Length: 42
Image (cartoon, rainbow, N blue to C red; front, side, top):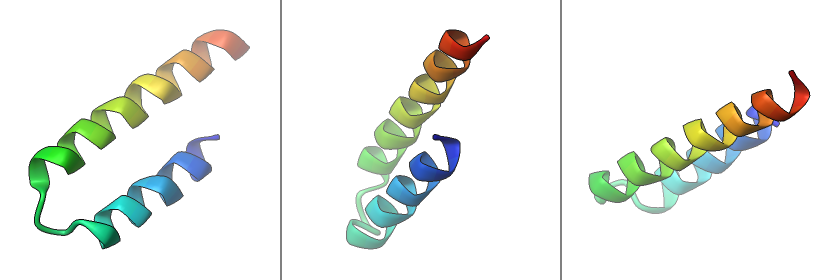
Protein backbone atom coordinates (compact mmCIF):
# COMPACT_ATOMS: atom_id res chain seq x y z
CA UNK A 1 0.00 0.00 0.00
CA UNK A 2 2.75 2.44 0.99
CA UNK A 3 4.84 1.42 -2.03
CA UNK A 4 1.84 1.90 -4.30
CA UNK A 5 1.31 5.38 -2.87
CA UNK A 6 4.96 6.23 -3.48
CA UNK A 7 4.61 5.15 -7.12
CA UNK A 8 1.53 7.34 -7.48
CA UNK A 9 3.41 10.30 -6.00
CA UNK A 10 6.33 9.73 -8.39
CA UNK A 11 3.88 9.62 -11.31
CA UNK A 12 2.33 12.94 -10.27
CA UNK A 13 5.80 14.39 -9.74
CA UNK A 14 6.75 13.45 -13.30
CA UNK A 15 3.52 14.68 -14.88
CA UNK A 16 3.34 18.11 -13.20
CA UNK A 17 6.84 19.21 -12.11
CA UNK A 18 5.91 22.91 -11.95
CA UNK A 19 2.77 22.76 -9.84
CA UNK A 20 4.23 22.56 -6.33
CA UNK A 21 0.91 23.40 -4.66
CA UNK A 22 -0.68 20.35 -6.31
CA UNK A 23 2.29 18.20 -5.29
CA UNK A 24 1.96 19.35 -1.69
CA UNK A 25 -1.78 18.57 -1.74
CA UNK A 26 -1.21 15.10 -3.21
CA UNK A 27 1.55 14.29 -0.72
CA UNK A 28 -0.76 15.37 2.10
CA UNK A 29 -3.55 13.13 0.78
CA UNK A 30 -1.07 10.28 0.40
CA UNK A 31 0.07 10.72 4.02
CA UNK A 32 -3.55 10.71 5.25
CA UNK A 33 -4.25 7.58 3.20
CA UNK A 34 -1.24 5.77 4.68
CA UNK A 35 -2.32 6.81 8.18
CA UNK A 36 -5.87 5.48 7.64
CA UNK A 37 -4.53 2.20 6.24
CA UNK A 38 -2.29 1.83 9.29
CA UNK A 39 -5.33 2.53 11.48
CA UNK A 40 -7.33 -0.20 9.75
CA UNK A 41 -4.64 -2.86 10.13
CA UNK A 42 -3.62 -1.95 13.68
